[in-house]
Length: 170
Length: 209
Ligand code: SF4
Image (cartoon, rainbow over all chains, first blue to last red; front, top):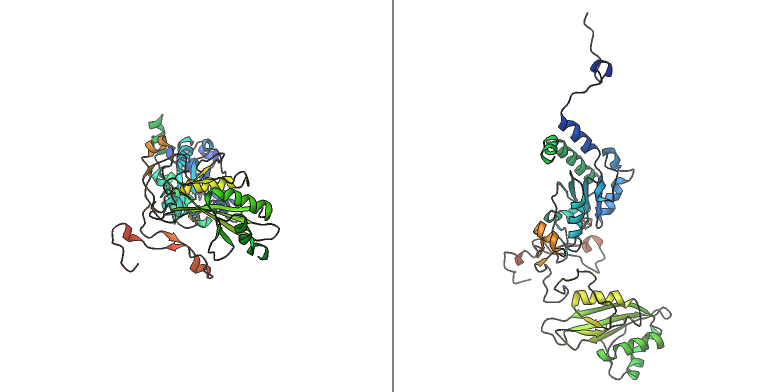
């Protein structure tokens, strides 16, 4: 007699406490679910970045609530605000201090393109000095837009050949 | 206002070289640069203008002479009156003004800002460094001969500049600059918006503008 297989979930008794998967899937799953942001709150967008951590928007739902103020402990720099030329080298140095792998979100018009500051003092987009993964439009973007950028970045991280990159750098 | 309305007249009695200055709001007075500190001291000690609101300057244009004027805005916390003191700089290429740091410590940063943006040096200033632009920046951006978009300059940190190949480039003016309309009652109208100056890039500037 054939019984219906109701075991949809992982069952240690049957699988013998072994899971078979791909290294990429595991590594990317870990990385994308615990992105620790480096809050580079340089202007008004920083306020929306803070709001994203509040319970109304709750960035913790995506595992990115652990704002680290040390670049050594963070994975993703969120550049939230106007980058002046005076500040730009410091942003680059903080980026350099972050451990690999690392990602960058340019939050808002200023970080993406200089925004409304078409002037002698403002860097016209943070991508002039550091590589940017996701750009968020808005002045300032709503917290939902930042969460959307975070989800897009998680999708991007999940497509990375993480194991191959690790082997190559070892 | 009553106490301050005649303050310029009193000052003129004491300092004959001062002249009244046309002003849309508060009493204002022109003083020779050499007497500026004496006039400010008198205003502070004898007229109770005890609060330094602002020190700033103006560039009247490359060909103007005198080209630079320094302004002091004073406020009296007892009579609640303002007064404006203006002094023309004698040197048009390398303007120098006396510091007011000994009268009000607050003058320190205002004078550093005026030096940074207009290049007016304040003699006897205790620490005349740039305050907004970085040390070693070669220009004074609020001078009339400095373009809003900026001039190509190396980044403040040469090492980072070398790695990133980035410099402080002139900003593109297509769709910009963004300007607010001050004094506009309707806040929607007052919002900063693009004043399209695309002609600075490719097109000729239209004659009507
Ligand atoms: S994009 Fe807008 S809100 Fe964000 S830093 Fe720039 S000016 Fe402020």
